[in-house]
Length: 558
Image 1: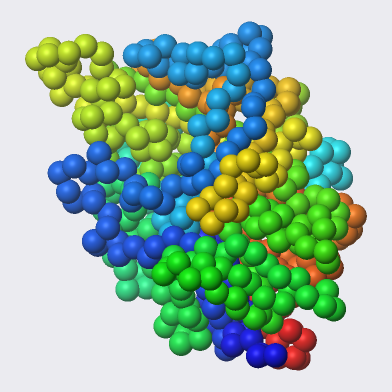
Image 2: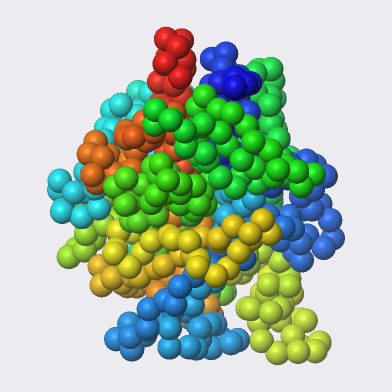
C-alpha cells in the first residue's frame, strides 16, 4: 500500500491548526494543511478603504452561521427579565418565550476566526486551571501554567503581542515584545469612571502592532479589526504563522477542501483522511499523523461522522465525551450616548481591560469570573448606518441632523464571563439536516444554569453602573446571552485530561486510544476561564504538542 506523502495532515487553519502546521514544518516535518474555506488577500478582499465599508461587514461566505443547527433552547423565566436584550428602537430583541439561536460565529477561511477577531491575546488565569479541585466544577487542566508559560512566551514573540510588561495574575518570565497601545479618548472616559467605582483598568494585551514588527506596519486605529485587517498589522495567523509555514518549504496548503471522514485502521491508528477538493473531486489521503483543528463545534462533528465498526460511537469517543461539556460565550454589552464628542468610532477595539473579577472566586457568591472591556467596535457602532438604524430614531432631515450630531458619541462597555459545563450543553449530529456532501450538520444544544445567570446579572449590573458613572445617558441598547445563543468562543467538546474515562485526549491533545490522532483547538479546554480570549492559549498548547510530535518523529514513532 502506498506510503503517506506527508508526516502530518492538519485539518483546519485557525489558531490551533496554523500553529501546528508552522511548528511541525519549522522542525522539518512534511505537512499537508487542508482548509475548507478560501484564502484571502487582505489588501484586496477587506474593504475598509471603500465607501461602502459599513455595508460589507466581513468577507462574504465565511461566517459559520447556517452551517450548524440548534436544538430548541430553554424557556425564559420572568425572574430574569432584567437580562433580556433590549433596543430602544425595537424593544425586546427576542420577544419570544424561548432563548433564540442566533448563530455560531465561526469563520471559514485560511486563518480561521483569527481573520475577524480583534486581536485579544490573553494568557489564562492559572487559578482557572484547577476548577474541579478548588470548586468542584468543570475539570482540572492536565497541564500547569508553569508548563505552558514558555510556549506562551514564544507565540507572543512570533505573532507580535503588545501590552503591559507585567500582569500580577499571569506571571511572565520576560516582557511582551511590544509596548501597550495608548487608550482611545472614549476608553479614557471608561477608565476614569471605573476608577470612581473602584475598578482597575490596564492596557489590554493585543496581537496588533504598536510599532513596526516582523516586516508589518503598526496599527492605524481605524477600529475595523472585525472586518479584516487590510494593513496586516493585526496578528491573524494567515499573515504570521501560515506565512512562515509556507516559507519553510515543508508545508503544502490546500484551500477549498472539505474533510468528510477519518478512516480508522488497524493497530488503533487513523489510516486515511477523505475529503472533497476545490474542484469537487473526492480524495483520500493516507496519513502518518492527523491533527484535527476545526473548532469546538466542527471538530466533534467530524469525529462523530467518522464512526465505523472499529469506532462505533465515533472516532476517539471511547469515553462518550466527544461533543459533551460544551462551554459557550457568556456575554453582556450595554451602549449609551454620551453628551460629549468622544470620537468613539475610532481607536483600537478593547484597548483597555478590567480583570478585577477574573479569578474564579472574585464575584461574591458566584463561582467563575469575568472581565470588562470597551465594546463599541464589537457592537458594530462605528458608522452612520448603525447610528441611523440603532442609535437615533426618526426619519427625514431631522433624523439626518440627529445622526450627524450623535456620531462618535456612543459609549459601549461589555463583559465576558466563565462558562461552566452543563449536561444540557453539547454538540451532536443533526438527524435530518445535511450539508452539500450529504453529511449530517452539527447540532448545538445549550442550557444556561442558575450559576451562569447569576454571573451574567453581575456583569450586566456592573456595565450599567459604569456607563452611569461615565456620565452617559440611559442605555439605548443592551444585549446578552440570556435570551440568545450567539457565540464566537466555544470550548470543551473534546476535553483533555489524564483519565481516559473522563476525557477524550491527553494533555498534549493526543487521543487516549488512537495513536496518531491529535486535537488542537478550543475543544481541548477543561474550563473556559473568566473571560480570556482563547486564541493565545490554543496556540501555546499547539506549540507544546507540536514539539512533542516532532520529537516522536525523530525517534520514528509516528
